[in-house]
Image (cartoon, rainbow, N blue to C red; front, side, top):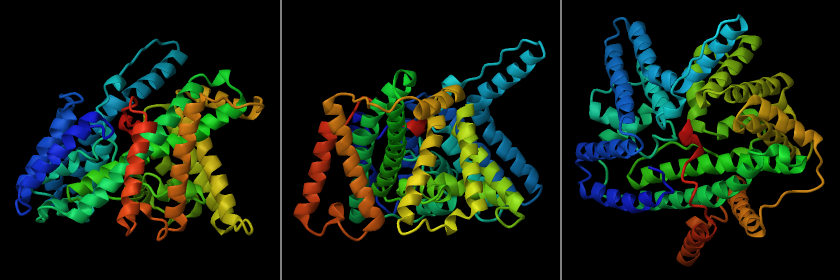
Length: 470
């Protein structure tokens, strides 16, 4: 279910009440209820997709039980990983493999056309597949005991707040929460969760969807605009993807809190990063830590020669690019981030002070590098990404396209609110916390102001989240 839809606004309070009618001591009954809700909500997209979700769940559950016996453990791990990855590869990557094969065959005079099912990719398949694979590897490396309660494990894989776009949950953090008795009603968690929902909604509909109107207008016809406008569209896309995905993650964590669960943090003000390496400590944290634990460290991490370490970084972010989508633009985007981090290590960027304004300079440089890479992430082809980048550097900067006075005013309002909150959270975390003010009047004035802002400045037609496509 999309959090910024009217269906969610109507259905979630009902689910919340039904959930808390069940006594907290009856955690298994609550788990069954949440499992049914998770599958029913997932099936509203397309009922047959639930069969894929169930198949990945059954395969990894059974493989983990076999791994627990330790007999032929590597073989069972291989079987489990391959079977769990098959739906993801078939639905998401068949086209790019088929296209590459077709091009290779045509180069030697053979004609062949291979088409997959990219148009029918089950939503959230990358997220729930990586979540299940992480659990399987944890069991293999003895970091996690195999889960014998199939209902609990199925809920871990399909938990509805996070199944579409994460965060990617860890079994070691989530499964224990399913086993312990939960409070009949946790007031403090519910209030904290509702605050996250409110601000996440603001990020999504007031900032992300509003700037998205400008981004789509310009980037879909970038050749018709000058260099300054194309550059502004790229900057606003950086804002859009952060507030879209960050807003979703915040809402998912908030819904989890309202239900009494703790989901892991997924964003930590990434555009205040002082290096690309630092950016990945703040951006999509659940994925970056997953890649570190299951790709980077098994490859050797940093406990190896310098050249091998550089190779490990490159491969890790190549995998990140491939995970994001079956398009060469994503693969190049991932390789860019790997190369940028290798360069930072090679030149000792972390040790460079850059003078009295060092942190500010580092943040600006990092943002420009990340923003440049986002162009390749956003554009449909490598050719379009290169041409748009070329226009930014070669076309005139004599004017800037404005999409109407009202739209511009709403964009500026959203950006000012976003920057003000991120600035205070980053540099003054114990001050100016208006949403957590001890004064009731201040708190509720802030709540009402944000809700009115959402109603007046929000865009409610763009009901999809960018990362739900991954």
